[in-house]
Amino acid sequence: ETGVTQSPTHLIKTRGQQVTLRCSSQSGHNTVSWYQQALGQGPQFIFQYYREEENGRGNFPPRFSGLQFPNYSSELNVNALELDDSALYLCASSFPDRGPATQYFGPGTRLTVL
Amino acid sequence: AQSVTQLDSQVPVFEEAPVELRCNYSSSVSVYLFWYVQYPNQGLQLLLKYLSGSTLVESINGFEAEFNKSQTSFHLRKPSVHISDTAEYFCAVTTNSGNTPLVFGKGTRLSVIA
Image (cartoon, chains in turn cyan, orange):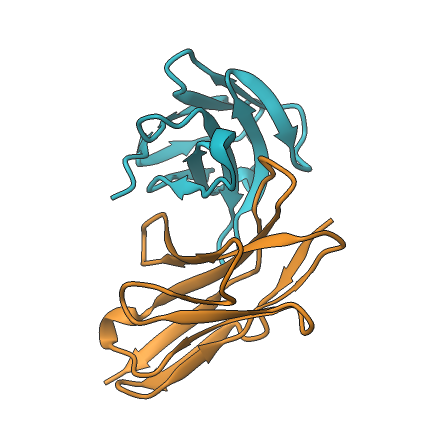
């Protein structure tokens, strides 16, 4: 158990809809990173939030957006869903302020777009 | 930019036999290296990591990995596997320049056969 939680566990949406996924960080961690894991692939970095500011972004379009709240929990929003957005979405929390930051992952949200 | 190559997509092995899962990375700067394990329908769990110091790192459940800078490798080994080790294993790299994201390989599916 890492202490990182995600909700919901599973979600089914249709093409064109919008979705919000939520992540609660491990206690004391101020950084959240989001990853997309397509079936049979390794996770791909979407973006990272550090102290409520976006701190890096991978090769994902602007319809993928996020927020980090003062308690360091986070949301991932995806607009105009496409079939290829079907994947496991993972969030990971870390605390980089004191050196090398190991990322601890939550259980993921499985998104299916029909 | 960093990249990770996991040379074997699937590795079947008999119970109590040794196993090696191969990982090679590419980076122009110093790196930190990680192995994560993913059991079916779950998120990623940290197995072990190399940050600095001894190039041989161990996990609590008998896995070990050795950082080889000259060969840019971080192979994972276990002398005797159990049925419960059946899972997907991901090698990941990040730079040591701060709070940078993880770059993952495509994963190796370890199947332990009774």
